Image (cartoon, rainbow over all chains, first blue to last red; front, side):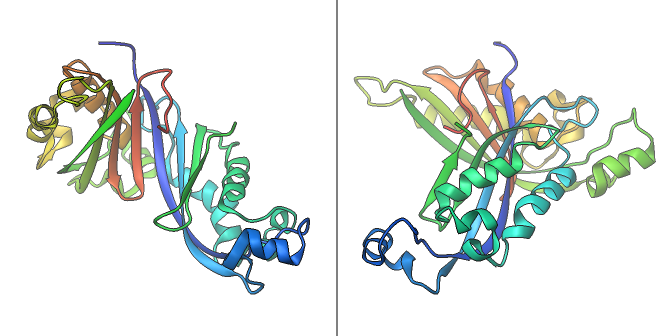
Length: 139
Length: 141
């Protein structure tokens, strides 16, 4: 038997939001060419699935890496409340500057969740649709 | 290196209760998971084996062989069981997703005849899972 394995806890959350991919650094024509129908000025929406992975030692008293109620409250406050049923580029200040691609959403959500006190954030994975998903591991 | 993953499902009941804590603390920490009669889940287990494909068979590990190992070590031990009372490896442990994943890791690690165990991912529900992987290995692969 080798040394104790590494353990991580994964939790999935759901939020629905709209976005428009548009860069102020590009011309109207270039925006159109680069982002295609995602550049539609009225925006469009997705049911996002957010998957977070936290590692740590399981507390011997509870058998848990993190108390799920505490984790849920933390993620709800920092991500779900400000993102769910919002327009990302209009309602989330950072996306006024940053194109709200799901890549950028991963890095922003990682920043918002990495200070969770009870466990170490290993990865943020987002499914934009059932066919497209993105992972950010903080580096 | 090639990674091979096999999935299996089992159904089991459990409850969370630490005898070192008071009844009130157990309720506060574990919430409805502390119900003394227990409750159940349909667990989904993903077992990932890493290795080089055999030059003759093209396989990292024969899936039939892996299926037999998983059936013997996991399904027969845990399927339609009450984890707290019927799985010896979980005696005196809270059968959280984390702990059950670790027990599964320990049951399988030394029994993989080709390649090596890379990751165990145990889903307790579609939205909650625990990963176990070799210390120092990358988690998300």
